[in-house]
Amino acid sequence: MTSGGTGRRNTSAGPLPQGACVTEYTDVAAAADVRAFHRQWLSGVTIITTMVDGRPRGMALNAFASVSLEPPVVLACIAKSAATYQPLLRSGHFAMNLLSADQSEVAARFARSGSSEKFEGLSWRVGRFGSPVIEESCAHLEAAVESRVDAYTHTVLFGRVLAASSSALSPMGYLAGKIFDPRDSAQWQGVITALAPEPGETG
Ligand SMILES: Cc1cc2nc3c(=O)[nH]c(=O)nc-3n(C[C@H](O)[C@H](O)[C@H](O)COP(=O)(O)O)c2cc1C
Picture 1 (cartoon, rainbow, N blue to C red):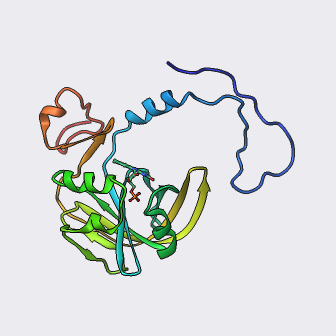
Picture 2: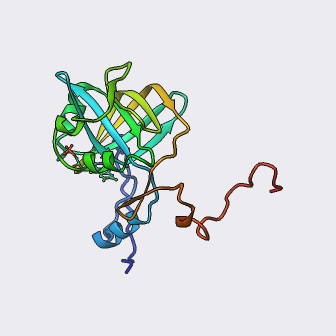
């Protein structure tokens, strides 16, 4: 199941260009193992949106992370093959909409490739900094693209967060290719080990 092997360290002297790997390895994990690893990653679902030529664009995304709080910066990995890729590069700004547990239809809509018809009949508005904000999302932020890094099939966008807003709505969960409702305790009982004590408990 796992592909072992020993990596060889690149011991060649001299300064490395910025962003270059410090070590070089001759082995690479089997694609199936890597896919299986990713299926064990529990996340939420976000919709990254932008606006180009007055048209809203967007796609489902979970390769998203907080980079820094001061200054507030996030990153998102975008497949170059996505129809939303060029609009994101052109506009230079995006919104990240964290879907709530009741938005399974929205998740399915933005997981399909297409263009602005994804927004037809959807409740959304233009945010303060020009990106589409999807109503009933449990949280959203708007960001300006500060930099981008080419990464094989993807480009990593770094966005300076210009505005962020959240609600008490429950977020959607995503695991092994399926979305689920974290409020459904039947899906969780016996699975979760508390990592932090409840308020009032000794820990
Ligand atoms: C839960 C989920 C997470 C996804 N995460 C990403 C991601 O992080 N980056 C990415 O490029 N595509 C991701 N995708 C795939 C895109 O949403 C999908 O390819 C979509 O059809 C792209 O739409 P577009 O071609 O209209 O831009 C994800 C899909 C789903 C369902």
